Structures are given as structure tokens and as C-alpha cells.
Amino acid sequence: MGTRAASNLWLIDKAPIDEITGARLPSKEQVLLRYYHHHREMGKTASGSRKAVVEEVLPFWSRAGIPTTTVIHAGTKLSKLVKAFNDLKKNKNKDRPKHRMDEEIFKGDLQEIFDLAHSSSLQRADVKDEDKEFLRSQREDRGELSMAGIDLVTAREVEKRSSTELDSSGSGNVKTATLPG
Image: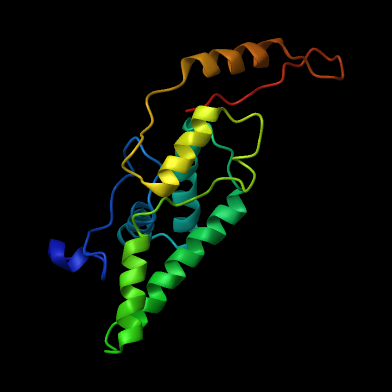
């Protein structure tokens, strides 16, 4: 693409991004811009782009200590976001109040988190209260709280548990656990 303005996505007026960064859960805008980076600039298929973006976004949720939906459902959610964007784009030249209102609603929603939390995340006992509060704050006001580095206390607990738990078959195989972050 020739100029920066030519590479900007319609309605968002930003160029696709090379990576998702920050200490907050990714927004719908960041995810959409990242999707189009994979799809347009890297030449991946729609499904390949979707898979790559979901794989990039899930570690943010893991670092936050919040259980997520399945990878399949995350991909479906991204597909719906892309479809909504493309549907609006098809009607961009129609000058009807409904189309303009739909565009404004979509633009406003882009600042919300790309919510991949499991439906029972806030009710689960294994999720820390501070992680639940972080999720609530990100859903309400993305600017309020942000993530620090890796929670070292939790990381040590997970590491200790994973090294001491043996396979129930008694074969001596050690179960592995994934560390957050």
C-alpha cells in the first residue's frame, strides 16, 4: 500500500498494528487492527488470521488470571466482530441515518475489551478476588486498572504444585501445569 492514509482501515482511521501491547486486556479495536495486519499485510487467509490473533490475545487473559472461553468460541467471537465491520463497510456510501448511527455505535464499542472471559469467571472460587475486580474494571472503564508483571506468588504456587503432583497411575510421570504469563 502506498501511503499511510491508504493503509488505514475505514471507520477506525488507523493502520493495522504489528503487535498488541499494553498492560490492559486487548480492546476490540486492537484485535480488529491486528486481524487486518495478518490478513492484509501478511497475506494470511481469514481463518489463519483469526487463529493467529486469538493465539496472541489469550496470553493477556492468562496473565490476568482470568479463565477464558474455548479457542473455538474466541475465534467465533472474532469472526462476528470482523463480519460486523465488513457489513458496515458495505453500506459506507449509503447516506441513511440508520447506517450513520450503526457506524457510531460500532466505533464506540471498539474501545471495549475483546471479552474472552469464561461465562462463570466472576463466580468461580479458583479466581482471585483481585482478578475478578480487574475484569470488572476492564469491562466498565478500561483506563482504571492495569496489569503489573507476573504474579510471582501465584507462579510459585503453580510451579510447586506441578512439581509435586504425580500421575494417578503411579507411573511416576509428573503432571505439568502452565504458568501464568
